[in-house]
Length: 438
Image (cartoon, rainbow, N blue to C red):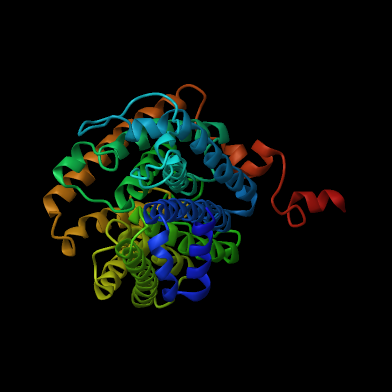
């Protein structure tokens, strides 16, 4: 142990010359430690994205619904953690073997071999569980913003339990668990489809079944824009998501114990950042051309669309290609937002345009830089996962609708979910509470 400590300290303080000590250090254990550390710190960054989703959505909903959306974002993360422990992880990874589903049962760590000196597993079991769990929570976060301002709290959380416990891990097993899509050669490096499009498909079905917010679409066919409460918060949320995405994509290299894996992570970080930057700038330019003014929310969603688009394959593109992939994602957002409005699908935060449309584009773009994949296989994966999530989500949404109910009443929607469901206000000094204190 002393030799290991001396080795790490020497590398940190003296750099390359310290590698002379490597002959005395157990390199396989060091690789095991570095891989584990990568999972853990990347998982923390992905968890930080939950704060980004919360702030983004809090800024884009109206003041009377801010506390509710914050509660939904933190509680869905708790639900995801519990359900992924009780059943999700094993459904996704245990005994899939080229099939369609893993096994039922709670997750349990097995690090006996590593404790006995055998580091062939590559990383601590718990670090892998933690990293995979936060991805599960991210998929659910996509849904909350889309269906905001008119869905009942407990109805939404009931859907989250099914999404995180069953729907997400089952389709995830098809690829990351070594299931049938993985056998075909389908590739999704960090989850453009497995995380983002899954959340997008679930959100789409929910938004259709729920219907639009009152007053969003007028009888004459025109659209009534409903501004958010705080664009400063929305911008902060986007910055947080952008930062967390380095863990989301970088950690998906699944290793940091060799020079090759370190280089791969570095490339992923660069491509992730470039795609976000290109998505934002492309969205700004597109909005300027189409509407003669730049819209902040479109710029924010353009950056997020660039991030979603590169997520399926951030390791193989050149920096120039990463810019192109992100820019296309940003352009698609600007085109998709009015398209969903045309069909009267009310998406409060633009989640469908960012996560669903961007996720599909990013997944189909993988073969451009990855010769081991094919467009047909990628398309099959997108369609198969989309069909499964749409059917499963529709069943769950309808079961909730016809049992405990899905939507708040018209009066409750007008009053705001903060008052009617929580009995409080996010900004009492500006709302009804301030009048009661006078």
